Image 1 (cartoon, rainbow, N blue to C red):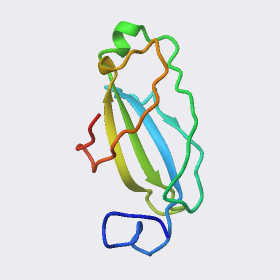
Image 2: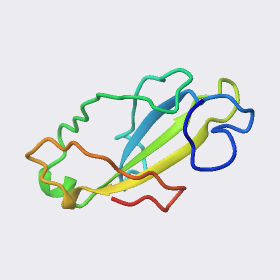
Image 3: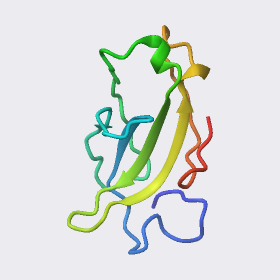
Image 4: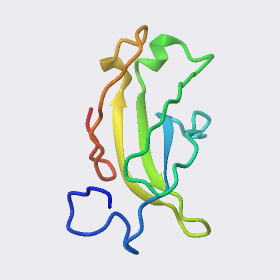
Amino acid sequence: RCPHPAPQPPLQDGNDPDPYVKTYLLPDPQKTTKRKTKVARKTCNPTYNEMLVYDGIPRGDLEQRELRLSVLSEEGFWENILLGEVGIRLRDLDLAQEKMGWFALGSRGHGTL
């Protein structure tokens, strides 16, 4: 069973989620910066090793954006379930260096760096 801080199982039906990560560079009204990982099956502890490349966006523009990272569970024909998300201000990162670290996921609109 997956560790979960709430007294309820990860999903309402008691099953482990099928998580994947979706990212956007905000603001992005046309959703042209959307990236999505592959789905990890039946786990609360997925591992993703994905490189995000945004060619054609000047560094000065990138530094004014927020990377919105959402973790969702794929639910087939049903609407996917948001498991958590975080907003990462790119001006707080050294974009010339690789960033490795942990980010706390929150509920919609409450993620923190």
